[in-house]
Image (cartoon, rainbow, N blue to C red; front, side):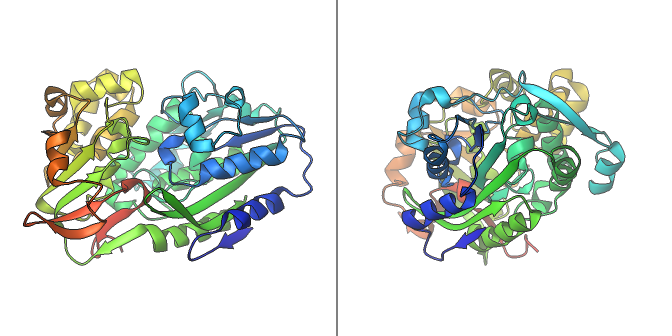
Length: 418
């Protein structure tokens, strides 16, 4: 099923599409796999609630946010994202370290082939045990197709193998993408990581009762516009969503940005693990010698996971070549390759300056991970998110490029994306 609208699908049209997508189904137990609240503008919270309300009087319905390595959602976050209709006791927590079962391996030869020989190790395929337990006869994976630093374009089977995946797959896929190079991946389909996910989808989960529910969205302030809804199992539906997202979420610039100012909505971004979208979604647009100022009012830590946070503080955002050397020299980083990949993603490799404006992380902490620091209150006196508009503008005689939501796009000069 495909539903599209240039101006955004209305609530009534969305509800009707959700009803038609499952009309006549009489499952005995349903599992919904939405993203968490860090995908606030995906439309997935509303869609998850619609599916829950449709099935709640037919059979038991569980909701397991595809957390990946993120923290579990609080009752407050669930209400904000899903609304009031889903009882908190129906929310299951995906534990990426303890709830896993290995269902196969992507052969080393295949990994080497798709990575052009950069990675030569097999990749274990692990998913949350609930997906393959047989207890659910309908599983709905809900999420947004949008440019992504690891897989190229987010969602589809990424929601399963990373969002509901385990330590091995998360680490291996993130490092595969980092080795291959972000700028060769972002905004594109058929990246090495996507090919690994396609292999795993075909060989190891084709038998489970899974349907993908994919969105393409933009936003105006807090208003989310769902321009595309793609529901089904076929990869061709994902490819249509990719093309639609490339149209809506890729922002081509004629010239590089000398200074970018990016705002991180505190409801979504409480760590640099997530907030560094401000860096890698803009890195192909910022000029050499330029500056990125990140307005991060609610960022209070670096990693979503305590061990990841410790490793980020220990090694810092020191650039791709230095991180690769650190992986060779340090066992703790070698055993946590997703952190190593994150450190690569969060660096400009010395091309431009990155300044975090925070109020919950100290100057010493910010500078300790190799960012520059500015007090948040000082930054917003000049760069007020309530006043700034997306795009190029002049503030007190200074030309800047403002981005209110890095999660929904990719910004690049035209020569960087072919």
